[in-house]
Image (cartoon, rainbow, N blue to C red):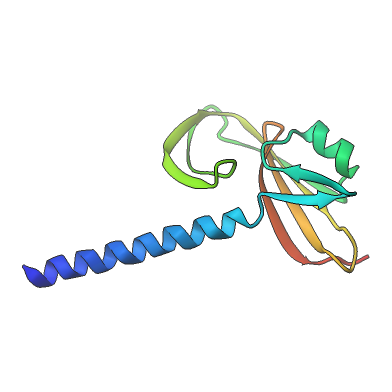
Length: 126
C-alpha cells in the first residue's frame, strides 16, 4: 500500500513539473517587437499587418469542419485549462516573418483571424 502511494505521488510530481515547464516555454513567446511596434497574442490579422507589413510566407488551412474541437491550452492567458469545445470549421493561418540575419524568424499562428500563438524559429536568412 505504501509503495503504491509513493508511486502515485512520484507520478503526480512529474506531471506537475511537465505542466510547469510547458507553461514557462509558452510564456516566452507572448509578444515580439516588429518595426518598433509590439505584436501580442490576442491581436488580429489587420493589426499585425499594420505593424509588421506583409509576412514572408503564409500557410492557410481549415480544421474541424463540422465538428467540435477540444482546446486545452489558452495561449492568451498562458495556462492550461479544462477542455473547451469549439465548433468548426476553424480557419487557421501561420504567418512567417524573417526579420533578418541578426534576428530570429517568427511564426504567428492565427485562428479565425486572431493571433493565438507566437513561436520563435532559427536565425533569419536575409
